[in-house]
Length: 175
Image (cartoon, rainbow, N blue to C red):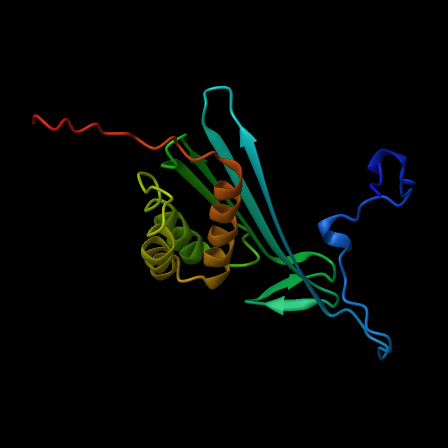
């Protein structure tokens, strides 16, 4: 006997978003939120055929933080990074921009992040990209948080941009 799926009752429950997922054990002690990290990536198709992939990472404490002589109020990001890459249809990075919140780092760290970002244009997102580029990027930026953000941005690019069609080369037997 076959069942017509169109006649099955539909659930009125909406689909959860990625941020709604939670591990819910049967018994859990009382907990207090202390730290939150938000990492969000978005991909945009441009009218010139390229893609802008942007990522943002923010760390927030639930208490006031003194960091490098700066006061950061509870609930405000004490670390905020943004990375955007422009990628063409061949998966080649054409441009890269980075922003580092001043509360997270001084001007030297921002300069290192900008220098690391400058190593990305011209690199093709392929199988060797992760190992080669990430290592070089981490050394130049001297910031594991920026490396984490780069990894998420590249994963988003791979999920978004269609792979180019393979090139077929014909070889005649007479050649």
